[in-house]
Image (cartoon, rainbow, N blue to C red; front, side, top):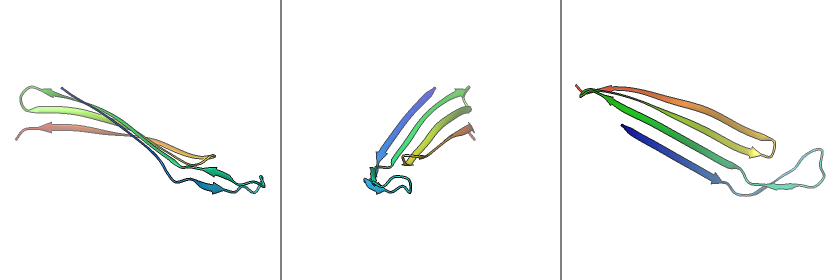
Length: 79
């Protein structure tokens, strides 16, 4: 049996954003986030299977946020 965990968080350089509604520019720092977890197990001597799930997120501005989930599924055998 195997387990995996991963985490990544990054903050970019600060910049000023200007809105057509507000007269004052605001400063903002973009942010990136990745989190992943995996699990694998071996069945007998020759076959194994596993799955890894990930969440990826990014904040580009105060009102522009993205996020997605991905998965990897693995089946392996010894030849």
